[in-house]
Length: 197
Image 1: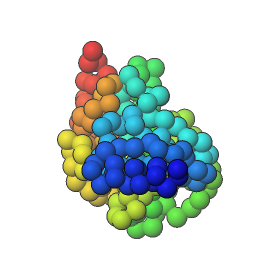
Image 2 (image 1 turned 90 degrees about the vertical axis):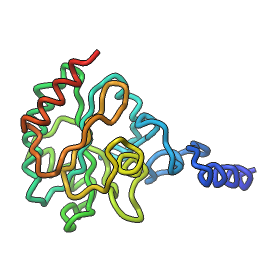
Image 3 (image 1 turned 30 degrees about the vertical axis):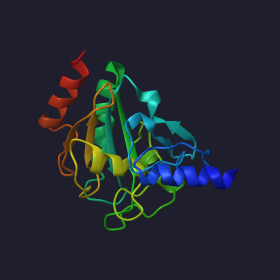
């Protein structure tokens, strides 16, 4: 029976369907995901402590997804992200941070080292997830979705690239890694999406 399920899952993947056959094993990022995914809310990600978080729990909220790193010239953006989170969280705004070591080996540490750095140096209170890959042959399915299936395709260029998601889970904006979170173009868009019914 397990062999049959594996064959069905492989066929589903080859035809572009998503599948959740089987369940996550320790250390894995949620259920088996095919290349094609219909919604951001289909993903289950491990938080920084390794606990699975289904992104569907953020349905109805405005999200800013950011790939982060601890030893980057952009790392001080954590301060602005925290300020933005404090300013807009009560209005239904969440920031989801995904540490990644894809650029310049600037996130080499373990999840616990990343957690200690972020919480001690920047006093983060927004959700921080386990380290993933956002580029290359081991790119996480979430970032396959963001870079290949969203209205803003294209590879992540560096640490702290940002994706804005509306309350229905639609990707409605992508911002350059050098654009600081409190830059007018980001704040204006966040406020616009928060105000939308």
